[in-house]
Image (cartoon, rainbow over all chains, first blue to last red):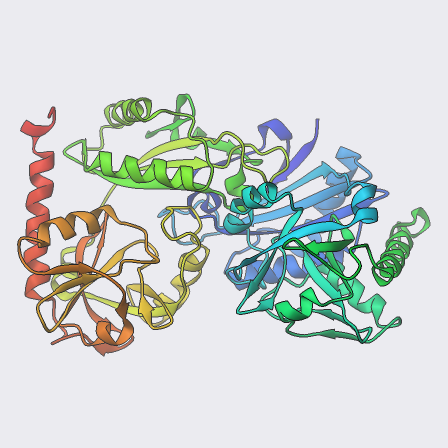
Length: 282
Length: 282
């Protein structure tokens, strides 16, 4: 039995519920964040908590736990659940709104799930993606609004793709749950700068790549994307995953690229360093 | 104590809860509809149920109740709660999704609240509104995604307005929870035709107005809006409400218009006819 934390107490998962007046159910109003534990240690937790509190503030949600209290709950939860390789999701909702519309003090929910990373063949063979013209509402905020992303899953499946990339006016932005990078003909690493959620894995890759090659965050046209030498996506659950086909067209030679592999190795090393048992108390 | 129906049973309101794996909480994924009871009789229920099942189908949510079963539950709920003047909300969510992303069989929630219509002075003095450039995701679907609408409430309050009207590329569409109509210089009644939710009150007003004046549903520019002789909004909880100020500029002579008042009277008559006690069994 897994434990879930809600507001001020731990509940067994099948008893973890929220009342129906919560604004998440009434109006899809809430923010969340999601990070991994490796060897029972939360990876890059400070970065994720920064983003979580920023998201909440941006849409006027009062998180009922201070940052240090919240961290304490996360550590207690990992002790109670003992799931060394897991995903932890922290959600703050608009709360039990009397009129079903105006946010009040939020409800906070912290849940943990065992996490399986994508299978090895995804890294070896690369991903196929499609594109869709769309920009998320308030893209800098990690809100719970995934209406478009979930709705598009049917088309993704029908086209036998792995994911869908958003673009608007011929400028690409992000996946519903991941960021995108390209390597161009000049050996530069590029990633979109606007209309995106600032991914934590994206941030770490930008840091790591600086020692390897020129790196720029800026607008990227769809043409530039299709003519890229390498393309990859980043996310908490995917680390870096190569993309080899977009809307039925091959990228580069249609195989995962060397720079993607190199950056993936660097990211793995960083992750191992952060989560080595010896460093657990650091 | 009010009763709430969830999936297959009635619950007391403070015990009405859904588990946290529901896609409404995880991904803001769900649809709903909302109608009034007058004299304990649901008003225009067939229209609302049409739209509810259409919304669910459009975003691949399986409603776990057939239409006739659902109606039966609504009538049972009105009996149990005995709230003659009320709002009834039917919500179908993406369900308890194992992966927190793909919709499964939905959860259905039916709740009833006492309903107060806007105070008399709103009808007498008219509403002040602001505008915001935005189109809802999948606007024809009554999804639970109100991220933008709820988020904008702060600006609405700060500008001492009553509501916010969406437009895109200088074409107006709708309010977060209401439709808009204008009367132009030629005595025509116009309402936006695209990027809107097809309101039931809007539908009834279009029907009623046909006997009064020329009526057209088509794109309306922001200029046409600002030069209108009368402007009003329609919704289930507002019926028709006159709008007298937009972004700080007066509409017409700054007072509620005669055609708005005439259509409001016609709507009231229709509502009374539909819900007269003698017609309750009809």
